[in-house]
Amino acid sequence: MSEPKIMLSCHNVSIRYQVGDFKNIGLKEWVTRRLTGKYKIVDFWADKDVNFEICKGDMLGIIGTNGAGKSTLLKVITGIMEPTTGSIVRNGRVSALLELASGFDGDLTVKENAYLRGAMFGYTRKFMDETYPYIIDFAELKDFEDRPFKQLSSGMKSRLAFAIASLVKPEILIIDEVLAVGDGAFRQKSEAKMREIIKGGATTILVSHSLAQVRTLCNKILWLDKGEQIAFADDVAGVCDCYEEFLRGASGAVYDPVAAKVRIDARAAEKARREAEARRLREDAAKLRKVREILCSTEAVGNKVERGVHND
Figure 1 (cartoon, helix red, strand yellow):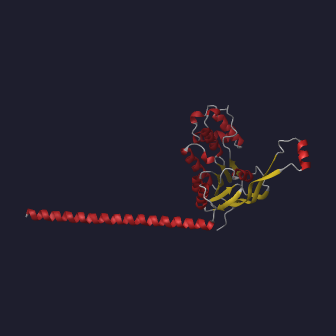
Figure 2: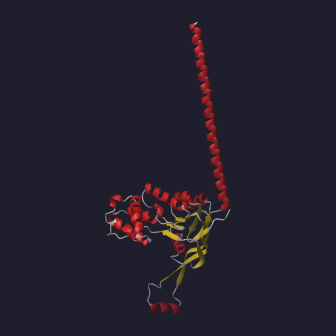
Figure 3: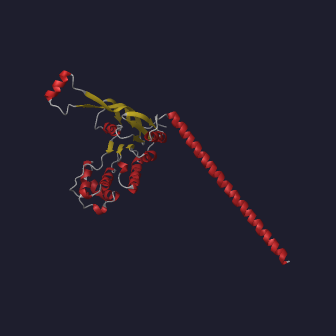
């Protein structure tokens, strides 16, 4: 059996921002401070030594609190930025679903904006004519297609953007909080659409604050905290459990593969114990029902015999 194709690899990727006052001073002041040694630049590392590989059909969940470096890493993966150090190797066409509600014109109608957004994605007019009915139905905006876009709620805008963006058939798909759009019913629909794209062979990266989505959809997980890589593993449940402990403020909540395996085995053993207990209770209940049936049958026979004796 052949090894799965590696679609994306990230090797020791670090991204640095230089923070200083050079944007707020003139050239003369800059020269003066440089000569006197008073000009300071601070290096801020948004991501530091990030490493992972994902193969065709994988779905990687990236988790972390705000400021962890998730969105910056996505910009490097999509090619918007170059890493300060390290390298990214992409073995397929990359499409990104980022900042869905941006790029629309509030004064145009919903239909006009759908065509405008489609053109931004590179879709032809013929393709949009064929797929527009699907887009408007998927976004649940049939009654609003002739209204100005600015009259829509933020949820409606995001639904339209998702419906258009999900038409792509990429080899590597980047999703940044896209599955959080709309209400609960639409989230289920968007998750089903993402599963359809994944089943089509797309390698997917999902950035989400919803651990439930990560647990359900992903088979690999990357945990970042303040730019540092805490964990990269295929033990999605174990890393999510540890991350939840971290969010609750547990001290020393660092992912340990060995400890995670112990937790997983313990959960499996507890589940097996509960299932065995439930099975024993069902068997005991069945035995009791059988005994009751026998007793009732015996009592009925006894009553019949007793009635026969009285009749004689």
